[in-house]
Image (tube, one colour):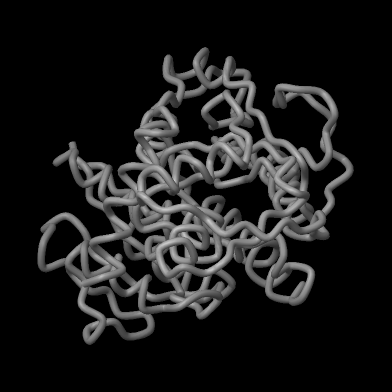
Length: 339
């Protein structure tokens, strides 16, 4: 029986790869949704959609565009915070599953433009929950973030840790999402999983994230900024591990007592920032001109996922080696950047 899945944020990094992964299963019918905002260059978003068979020329607000490459995929441009259009889409399509990856991203940008985060991440997510209540789905999978852990001193970070001290508005909105989702799940019997992603990287990644910034600068002979003088660790997680986990989690049911859960999804092995830069240098065959900088507001020194609960629930944990992942990313970067 065909399962119909809504993937929001489908023109984004994780959303694009999630759609590609789901389309490998011929029993899935996938609808992608995105507002294609200009937080970073929409050209990259349109290029991702083009890979999915959606031409930029065909995209109009609220019109569903069928893919020219995948007969079980179509795309619609809608704002998450547009309640009327969101409800209209749910009423028309009658989704079985929702993977909600749409959000205003970026820790540092949230300091400069907090309103965008309230509109998309708070109001938009509230409307998503309302849509799932009004037009019931089997499972809502929602993108949270490791940023909710803030400067958590206990490592590795566990889902049971206290996360009441976010150091950025972005993190605060993601924690708010988790709390609101819990209330909706309990009140309205909505099955919800909130996934705390840990530093996702790979081909088609966001241009404001470190891998792309480093690769662009190094390959152009420009200096790179290394914050906190390089004394940082990140639980870098390769994109294919993330989307494999998302699909498995989406299809995993709940027992009769539990309809809500939070899961870390990370590699479970933090990498020193300087080692990550070295991996990029090695893959490019070029050395970086490093400019060491102090810590930035809203940033944290270390992230590290405890993935034991993820393995308990779906029998899976990310494990792509950093060198392998960076090589895949740089191979794509060279092809994309110089086309």
